[in-house]
Image 1 (cartoon, each protein chain N blue to C red):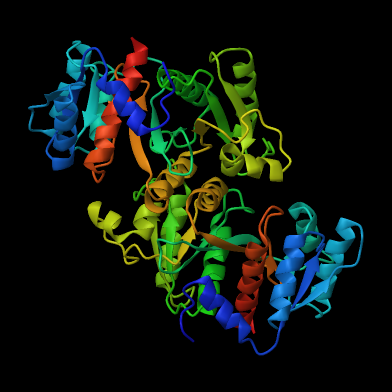
Image 2: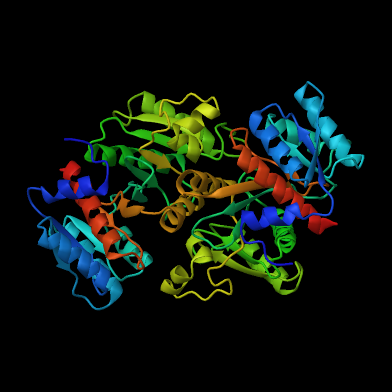
Length: 285
Length: 285
């Protein structure tokens, strides 16, 4: 397959899927969610299954049950609070997070100034990732990139500077471990480097000005953020201040991918998030 | 005075200063630093004092000594590593950080989509601010805004969500304390609110979509970031991905303001940082 470099490529790809993705839509009570589902369904690449329960928690449980019963391949969050949906997903007996799996949030951004899609984690779920959680984020990221045809994804471990200082920033020690694991082939084909700041992760000129040598060459496909505050600021800054940015979001770690957009998100973001999970799924089979 | 809403206003203002600001320029060995100084000097609002010592640490000590001796009002960092300059500023016997003062970094951004200058802290110096450090940041921020004619600055205490959760995010408890101090008049005229995310801090529509009531009304003048990672990501994202953004930077807490730009910064950023410290000084007298 060729590399999916932007959302138009992504839509071309999902429109050619052999069979539609069966999506459990939790509380499609807002226009944006319905519009996104109807558009994707009319193009033939999803089959929406709308929850019928009236109580929010019951609707979330219904969607999760459909996944466990093999009736749905993925979930889309509609007009429901994230924590209610998460509680259903995380339920130890009836949920869809396999024991030991790490649940994490991924965003995929199409940014005008970059010529590729940028995946980043975690802007919404894990406050201060542990090494185990960062390892899972890296695993998921590489798998996701492979699903997008990126054969050797470039992953940047971001920090405010290029110097590791484990005394003040303990996670910079984890970064060294992650790089070693990547070199040992633990994640499959990928290039992992860090600590790098956001600019040296994404811009070759910035890298050269600082006289830093990085195998990523300022062309990262994935950003692993040090904490949720940094990830969230990046997400919000992009949507607010970087013009013509388009975004899609999902949860990873669950049995079925969950398209998780904010209640205030547009129909387009929900539609693109559906495409993101459909493409992610195509690589899991 | 009228409010300084953008860098053109700022330049108009400093060009009308009664006497030029005497700036100790540490290691003006790069073209960008010299160009910035010569332009400001030719316009009559700074008098540059170039360090003559050849060893970097000696040049930094020389600039700091000029401030202590009353020969310089401010410092501009040229082609010298930040840590060397900081060491000279922080020296307990010969430095310029009064005992008990907090040293912190401020950036001032002119962003195309906003109609005002945005001040933010801390993208570069304090890793995880304590309550004492946040209190100082807030004090400095209000003073800085007053120097820009903003009579009642709006300060947002940023977090990834609007809910305070001191168990996972202890600083959200500090945010409550800061709000109380502001209400008690500790900082002078200002409006302080938080936790708010970056988007609800800067965008009224986002605030309304989330049904949040905030006295800032999505019109913050100042952003206090929860940690250096978030501040740094904001800084780097603006310079990299938000078109037509202009930036100026300085250190606060020292006897004299220090214009602290990165070695790779353009002459324009250095020139604007000179204007920032000149304006900041005008309010200290």
